[in-house]
Length: 293
Length: 317
Image (cartoon, rainbow over all chains, first blue to last red; front, side, top):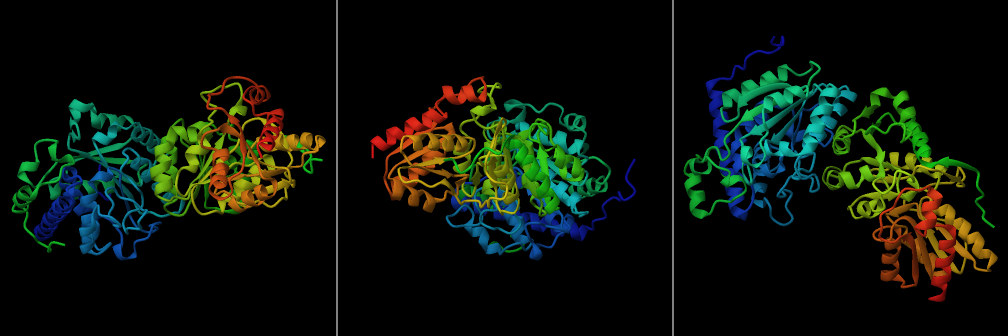
C-alpha cells in the first residue's frame, strides 16, 4: 500500500531539460578532470550522473551556502564508493558548495579535491572520508541515529557501489539498520554490474540482490539510474517510505560510462583516463551547457 | 617507601564503567556503543541509565566504528566498547579512514588489553594495540594505571575534542592513585622522585614499577617512577627532565617491545638526549593461557624483571 504522502513526481518537461543540461555539463567536468591528471575513475562517475544531479538539484533539502559539518536541519549525503569523486566534486561545485574553477585542482598537490573524498582538507559538502570500501553505510546509519537523537526530521542519503557490497561490513551495517529501525535513511546501490576486474557476476556474484536486502529487513525499491524521470520518481517514492520503521534501499540500474558511447558496455573505463583523442571524441557527444571550468 | 600504598583491589574496566556513567550524567551528548560485551566492559550502568543513548551493535566491530563516526556528525560524543583486540586490530582500517583521517570525535575504549586478560589466551591478548594506535596521526593514546585513574581518564577524554584510544584491562588490580589526584591528558606523573634511574611505566605495570622502586631502595638505588598514562601525545619534557637527572631509563609496559611506550621513549631519547634504556616488555611473542601473575612472570614483566632491568641499565651508564 502506498504511503499517504507518496504522490507521483510531477516534473515538468522544462525541468527535465534543465536537469539534462546539468548532466551534460557534469559529464564534461568528469572527463576533463580525469583527463587533466590522467588518473581517476570516470566509469562509475558517468553512470551515477543522473542520480547525483537529481539529488543535489532537486531532492536534498539543504543550503549549500550554509553548509556545515553537523548538518542539523539539513538532509545529508554520504558517498561510500569514494572513487567516483569526480561526479561528486562536479555536482558539489555546480550546486554552489565551492567555486567551479576549483575543479581544476582535482588530484593535484595541495588540493581540497583529493583523489578520494576527505574531510581532511575542509572541502564543503564532504562529511566523511571514503575510498576504502564498505564503510559508508555504517557512517550513514550513525548520522541517521544522531538525527533521531537530536529530534531532527531530515533524512540521510548514501550511495554505494555494487562491487562494494562484497565487503562484509556492508551487511553488518544492513543488519543493524533494520534492528534499530533506522527509517530516516535512504541508501542507494549503483547496480551497474561492473567492477575493476570485470563483471560483478564473474568476480563475485551478489546473487538475488533485492531478496538479500529484503531478508535483511530493508524496504527495497528499484529504478533506472540513467533515466532522469525515473530517478526523480524513485527518490520521491523512497522518501515517501521513510518514517515507517524500516530503512530504505534503492537498487539503481546504471550503465558504467553512460553518456559516452565508447565508454559503455564493459568495465574497462572503471578507472582509466581518456587520452587527448578520446577526450575530444567524448566531449563531442556532450554539449557544454553551463560553461567548462 | 612507596608513597602510594594499596588502597583497594578493583579492575580498571570497572573504572571505565563508573567514568562512563558519570560522563553520561554530565553531558547529554555522550552516547555509548557496545559489540556484545556490555557486562565485560561494565557498560551496564550507562545502558540502564540512558537506554536511548546506548546502542547494542552485536558482534560487528567494524560497523560499530563506522556508526560511532557517523554519530559525531550532529554533535554526539560516542564511546565504543569492546576488547582491545577487537577495538584495534580487527577494525584498523575503519578507525584509520572513518575516525582518524576524518578527524571524528570518537572515544575508542578497549578492555582486556595485554597478557593480564589471562586464561583466554593469545587470540585475545593483544600486545600490538598501542603501537597501531600511536601510529595514527591525530590519535590520542591513554593507558591509565588503576581503577581511579581509569575513571578519571574516561571523564577527561569525554571533554577532549578528537579521537582517543583508551586502554584498560580485565583483572582486579591494586588501586593506589588517590581518587582526587588531578589527571591531565598528556601530562606524565612523577609518582616517586629519584636520582639514579628513571622508570617509565603505563597501565598495570605502574604498580609493579612502584614495587620495584621499593625493592631498589633497599639496595640504595633511588629510582624515579613516572606514570606515563598518555603515550600520545607523549610528555617529552617530563621524559627529558627525568633522564637529565638520572642518566638512564627503564620502560615498563604490557605490550610487545615493538611500537609501544618503550619505543616512544626511545625516540625522544635518541633525538634529544641519548641515554641507555632497557625494555620491560613482551619480547616479540604471542601470549598464552594462564593467570595474570603467572603470565607476567613467564613473559618477564614482573617486579624482579624491572629490578633486573634497572641493574642492567645502570651498569651501562
